[in-house]
Length: 177
Image (cartoon, rainbow, N blue to C red):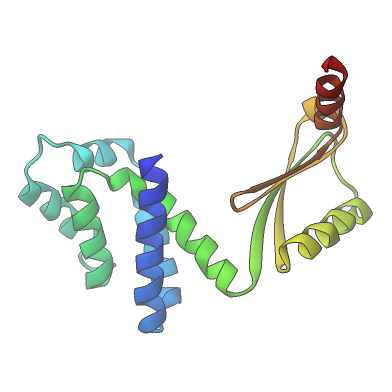
């Protein structure tokens, strides 16, 4: 849980700096470069290792990113490496992108349905979610037959459960008492 909140705090700080310097697009690009490189698990293990000297970690980061990242992005990596938290980079990138989208009035929503949706059904769900969130929504769909029917939607920290399986569970609970 601390990693979750830490990544959000880093993302919020980066967003403040990026907005102040009017370089949000640069940060998006830099975080993408960082995320791509840190998909190498051996590199992450080395940079997260408390046994490795800080000078070695910084040297590795300089060699990998020295010419491709600006000073602030590189400083972020130094800080994460010194804290043995370089694995937060991916979550920071995701949280940063969410903050940028929210600032643009776009809400990312993860929807789970029992079956694939046709265009009309997707539009109906999108309209419902836009009404609830008050924002334009960008929907990612996942199919899970276990929800039987209806849908579940995750918007930020909010879960909207309009699934048939949830309705059945609610009825079971009410019948027990």
